[in-house]
Length: 268
Image 1 (tube, rainbow, N blue to C red):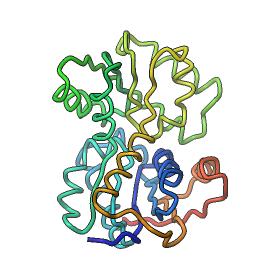
Image 2 (cartoon, helix red, strand yellow):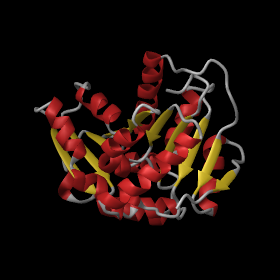
Image 3 (cartoon, rainbow, N blue to C red):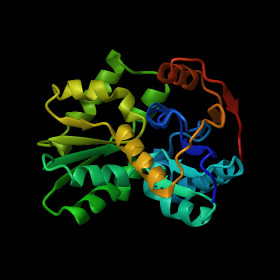
């Protein structure tokens, strides 16, 4: 198993995982990050389970070669469809975490949550992972789900904070699927980018859960428990993409308040 000075590896299909990466760098500034955005194959949400597993295993191997002590699957579609396969594949070479379990624990431990909604990609929603795991821990909770597949390509193409994104959000959330919810799980790491727009749609009367912060608080506790918290920073963060996109660069600069050097690396 790796030492405390080894980096945290995390991956997503595109820019969404940057919400998690930014939260990690804020909460754990001594940790070195290696990020892989599989922009060549985005979005994962409309892919089959078998395809998502194949991509996830390839990226896990890449992050292992980079010495990752932890591999965080910073993608709900991959977390719900490939976590067990990645964990088995990696074995004892590194710890593997996902973005679903921390959010489920947060929701079931929150007494004020009585009727929770989940929105996400088709792959995430069709897996039924969130409702299955939530209800297994709290039978009294009502869980509603809604696939919102256009949100990821919308965000990846830069349509945020404008009339187009507001119209798409209204079209989805105006459906009856999520009627009556008091809380909403953003079941995709892309969605925190438009969290304020979603909150505004609900007139700030629905608790739109900031999943990135929950995941990173969970990871901090996990590293502390395993004795893997970095004592000193070993090096600069590194960001890889399988195919370069201008918007990825723009979003990275927005989150980190500096220019991020993107390295194009296709592993297929």
